Length: 581
Image (cartoon, rainbow, N blue to C red; front, side):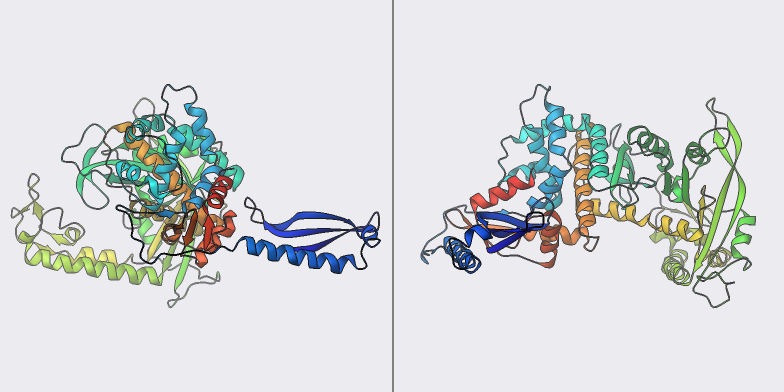
């Protein structure tokens, strides 16, 4: 505490008070809090010889008294034994999750949506447990319920209530995603001019699929029943929208339903969608561009296959003419990077409403670039595949159609039985396809991007496309840190609810990263929050044993003090109450 002097320019008088530094838990801004008002200096001078010196001493004494109040003497019995089944450890890092959860007003949304329902359980409380558990200790719904006592919350519901609530969560899923969008836009700002879209799948460890969980090859090369997920994120890497599809849905077929929902429900205005070549079809391009008059309603930046292009396109890519280096000068033979572009009219096939195929012309910018590091990586990757191809030629019976994946394209006279997948000798002895290898080598390091944005610079198109790694990183987080799969629920609405909790968890993690200036990975943030724990040292006193650079950064960004070594239970509850405001 200290003596605060406030001078009023209008009256020319100075007012004295005893104040204390205080950090606002909502804004994180340090300010003063008046502890005791003293009066105007000119009035106090009539009562004290030196009121400034006097009240400085008073402030110092009040500080010492406060310190004494915060000191207690602990009596420790070294012979004391733990009672059976003692586990008094509590996680406190979840306070950060609660902070963002309530900033997004998910509590208000869920309370409103359950107001007129017949069930009695608290859907907001259940969702809090599912989200906290998904971020900190990913596990089944049953396990999450069993671990509920590691938090300071009162989770007054049963395990059956958790399962029953999943149907309700699925029902409000689209509305909740929309709610999240507008809250993020209002609280943190959101960039929806650029939208990244991609598709992945998640497997189920079951023997037989159903109408939703279709048997297919997962991204992990497992042949299990799977579901497909189309995910859109904004220009800052924060999730915007997801939708689930049956496991046999082709990636490109998810595009129009997903983008259509975004356009209808998120009030985005014109968007530019960034995606990889697996999404490119004439129908998808024409869907984005809009009407028959050719006026663009939306736009795209897509990767484009060099090896799968026309002969004219391949010749354009390999021709040295028109390439420039990073400085815009004609590219020489020894450059590490070169780029060129052209605007062309390209014909695409479009499916009309009557089912017929029509040829439509689109005008797009083609950006071609080559990088030395990309070329070296492509060569190294192919050498690994060729090792397998050489072995495949030497002993094809060791392989099946599935295990020969990647290497088989470099081998001629190779046939596998369609039913068993085993090697078949109907075509004669397999030989290496040297012509194919030479052809592929020609395009090492070359990449092509096509865009509807004719006025966008090459640098902007390339940098925007490179942002697509964010969505790949997002899928990685869901499958590793959040352990989204394997999925343990089986009903379709329960599956959707499971992915909704994962979507919310992922969104909160990305907001943590945004608030801490993207310095820390989601993995390090989760590790940190898991380490912010305490144990009941004595009566209502809890002892903390962890503090780090990350915990300080998260605490500062969210206005939560994670620096105390000891806290009374009442103070812990006070902090948890503040983060819910």
